[in-house]
Structure formats: C-alpha cells, structure tokens
Image (cartoon, rainbow, N blue to C red; front, side, top):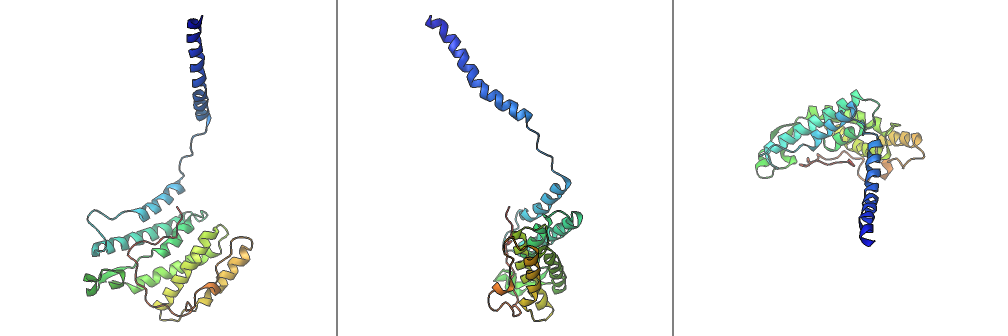
Length: 230
C-alpha cells in the first residue's frame, strides 16, 4: 500500500512546487511591457553621456592634454544641456544640465603659463576672458529662470541660486565691477513668494561675511564638481 502511495505523493508535491512558478510566469506575461524611451529620454541621456565620458587612453591628469580635453568636454556638455532646454522647454529635467553647467563650467583655455610645468593646475592656465564672460552671463540668465521656475524642485532651485551667486560674482569681476551679493535678494524674495509652502528658498542674508565683495580670481578645479543626484 505504501509503495502505491509514494508515486502519488511525489506527483502531488511536484505539482504544488510548480504552482507558484506558473503563477509568477502568468503574472509576468500579463504585466505591461516597459515603455520605450521617448525622444526626450534619449536626448537627456545623451547630454549626460557627455558629462560621464572618460578621457581617451593615454590622456591623464594633470597633463596639458587632459586640461584641454576636459575643457572641451565641459563646453560640449554645456552646449548640449542648453540645446536640450531649447528643444524641450517644458521638461523640468532641463534645469539639471543648466545648474551643472555652472558647477563644471569650461575655462576656455587658450594656453598654459610657464609655471604649469612645475605646478600643473587650473591656476596656471591662460583663458579667453571674453568667452568666459559670455558664457557666465548666459548662465546667469538661465539660473535666474530656474530660481523662480514653477516646475523646478527645491534642490534645483537651491543649486541654481548658489550657482547664480558664483556666476554673478564672476561676471562682475570680469567686467571690473564691484559685486554686491544683496543684488540677488529680489530672486530670493520672488522664490519665497512663489513657493511659500515648499522648502525654504536660499537667501543672500545667509551667505558668509565677505560675499558682498568682489571675489578674487578663482583657481579652476581640475576635476568635475557636481550638484547632481543621480
């Protein structure tokens, strides 16, 4: 009798063990397929692929070749981020690239100082001041839009405000003007009025002492800085 029951019991156990697998397979078949990336999704990833690109083989930090390569990379990334914003003016992801393009702005290198041989850093590169002024001025315009944008999140607005502080100071310095940080107060006020229930908007009053003076020339960082959360 026991011998007859053994095959039956094994058959029942086998069917029971297969039942969850069958249900899982049925659920997977019924689940909708992931949506294909939209053109905006593909263009957005293309922008950040430029940012994530590694230098070519043999181009290593801190060589002149690396500084030139990175400068071109930052220029290409900024151009792609701005182009994305123009192509998709209602996509809030455009703010990510605009803000990052300030934190990793290009230097527009035209040459290297003799001191670069012994001290290869961003302070010993020769830059195109006019190109830098045009670039930073456009960044100021874009960042002012982000600070008060209804579709920007709190992190984007805060990142834009602090980048605006840096870029506005750089523009003033390149123009030979005194930079007064309180000139940014209207943007902070507009942000607070537009988003009274969201995270606190940044304020010039919270800036460290001395921010109201024209900043000294800044040395370029050799590696990317990022405000991103990805």
